[in-house]
Figure 1 (cartoon, rainbow, N blue to C red):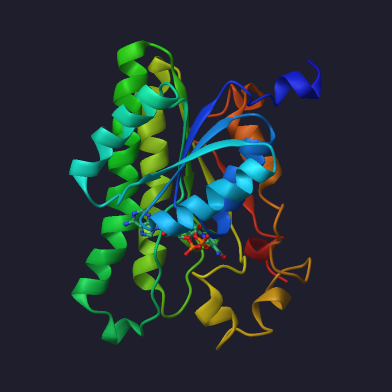
Figure 2 (figure 1 turned 180 degrees about the vertical axis):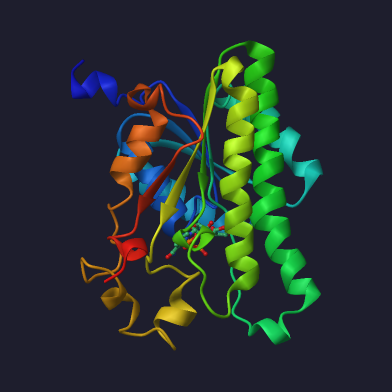
Length: 256
Ligand SMILES: NC(=O)c1ccc[n+]([C@@H]2O[C@H](COP(=O)([O-])OP(=O)(O)OC[C@H]3O[C@@H](n4cnc5c(N)ncnc54)[C@H](O)[C@@H]3O)[C@@H](O)[C@H]2O)c1
């Protein structure tokens, strides 16, 4: 099959949580410039609108929908609205996430709960809603969960975050197992280190100048480094992949 056909995402209706910033925006961008209709979901309407405007300038088709993934009362109505405006979601990217930095002896129960509420519960409820509708219509679909190299690698002072990402990895495989018979593929992307508002406090603080040298390529992830993995998992090119994890980390997880 030719690459243009194999990696075609032009028929997709893609919902990207946390799509207004950082990695989520980069994911939304590669989908939009390749013809998918993209829904950017997140908490801040102004940020989402600005991101939509950038995608439209690039010739993409995008809309913004405010969703707090912790709120059940926002999830189903948002999918209803997308169905009305664009059609049913065929690709969900669970990208919304929060982090923290706490010594293990100081990690507050509240921090642990907050991180789990967004990173794990939010992703689970979004995946469940997307899958229910894919099953309802018998049309299948693709779900991509954004975890992290920290789902396997331990790191000091990010126990809650790392545990949440490990949970996402296992959740990916469990959902993949249950939903394969409905032609729903559930896969995971494990990014290494990228400069975003999530990592800025660390990369511009204690981790400044350090993390880029922690992998054999000697640099942090850049703006287009996730494009290939996203196009693969979003398209028929990965039709026989489910429950898989793709690591995109410049080799960080294999060492320097
Ligand atoms: N930056 C990195 O190096 C790196 C590495 C591995 C994994 N990740 C993962 O990538 C994803 C995106 O992070 P990022 O680095 O782009 O940071 P970011 O802060 O730019 O993005 C996080 C996004 O999640 C959204 N969000 C947070 N809470 C939400 C909620 N309750 N409901 C809806 N949206 C919510 C934010 O509005 C924001 O748009 C996260 O899941 C993060 O764990 C990032």
